[in-house]
Image 1 (cartoon, rainbow, N blue to C red):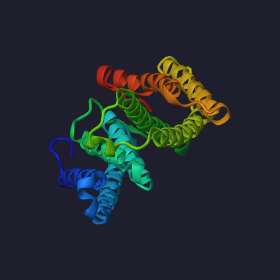
Image 2 (image 1 turned 30 degrees about the horizontal axis):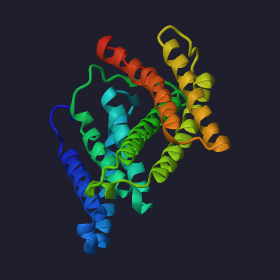
Image 3 (image 1 turned 120 degrees about the vertical axis):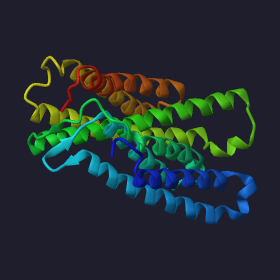
Image 4 (image 1 turned 30 degrees about the vertical axis):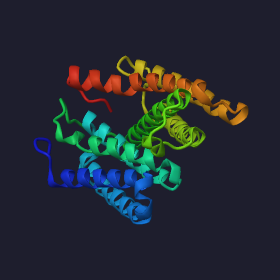
Length: 274
């Protein structure tokens, strides 16, 4: 499974890429006459890819005797969340161009489990610890998707300010719509990250042990920044670059907390965090 690309992974990759092409063409004026069938085909292709990717991911993460935790599995999970949010985003027609971009990234991430990890340890802890780990992985993945949407918003803002006009503009939603999606992801991610932190304090014996202290401190800092951003949006109407940059700072701390810790433990020290 980790040596060669499996038939399932090739199928998932092709389905995602076909959905990307269909969603992209659907947004271009030259294909307006075939817009409806392109949308139907893209939605079906993306949904099937999402289901197959989820099934493959479950086989990667859930072992008979516990959770199998690797960097590759975490990346693949982020890809699945990219695809999920991309598919949900297609409900709003103007977001379908961005959804194509998210699905393209999901296609690449779905191949992550092809590459061997330094370790493939299985966590055989209690169901509470396993639940905490799964919630944490989902929170980090969701907020990673938000970081990609935030970068997309910055690109949009830059294009608007420079007055760039091209056919590619049809792939961009109005900036306000993109920001609305970003804050929807931010709010969801903040709630899940809060659940992760609470479950950690409830179920993990010592979150401030030597090998977890940096991860815990950085996660709390990221949680605080995301909380401030959610409150600022809700009560003060924060938007624009200030809000996007605050999100990205929160994500930097989250990235260091999770992916930085995992990389050091798994790739350098040859251990698995869990």
